[in-house]
Image (tube, rainbow, N blue to C red; front, side, top):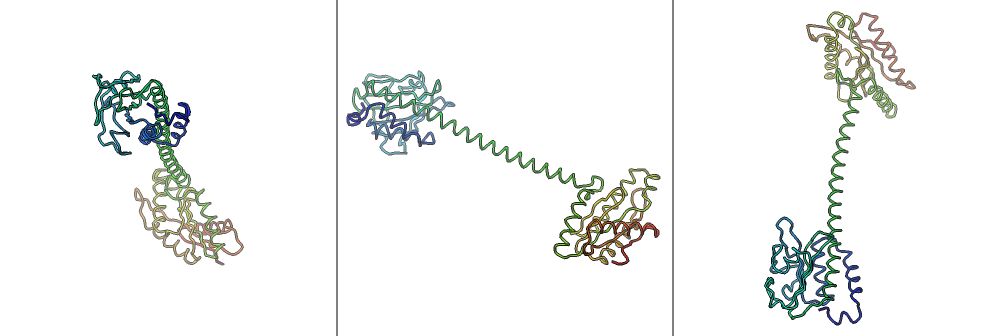
Length: 363
């Protein structure tokens, strides 16, 4: 029975309100069970409190918190019980989902004694709607230890427990869903990043030769030009194309022509330095951007590449040559002007018989 010293200054509603306010800060189910047990014994003055949670898989009740004569230690259950639904008074409450108040346990056949048998018992289901979360149980060493007022208090407390358990469960589900969602978002973000990188790569690469395309070369030209202007470095451009390539297409077909273009690109790629940028300028024409390279060095590199192409036999015993135009940056000149001079040098190489390297005579 609720202790007299508690009821002198506090009504039942006051006690419940105070109980509910304290419960707000509890954030997990086990802590909630221990909180309730402590409050029922310590604040409300009952002798004993045991809380069972329902294990739906095994259809049994498991002790999660117990405070009182039978279990004097807080946070530790000395002899935790597991009770099958339907067995004993606690099991009957779980089965019927109705509270039971027994004033004299000496004549109760359903009573399952614990470490210290009680003489009266109040047992209430913890229900949220139709769902059973567990059972709130209290025993007394006295016959008639509980009355209907106590039943009302325990039933009200059990509703508060059930509501809080439902909220905790929903919060945990939301947290799990949020973690799963964040993980999926992270995975999709990574997939999108990879896809975008692949698209960006494909948008900047010539599919036949797998070297930079014209769009990418334009970007690289501007970047290297600005770097050379900013730091005062050298920069050379090597423009070259395959001699008499139309004849290869006309006599051997476009498939062979494609393989020749790809083969020339591979030779140029293998000959280039890591700092150089090689790309397909258009058709059978290629461009090499060579930073930190003087005009003399670029001419030497172009001549080496010309010889490599000339001495290579491509598919179906096809041999080709290439003509080269070289230009290097000058003060107060745009990159387009440098490119124009390289193109003029390439045109001169063609006029002078092809398969040769030409550059500005004043470079």
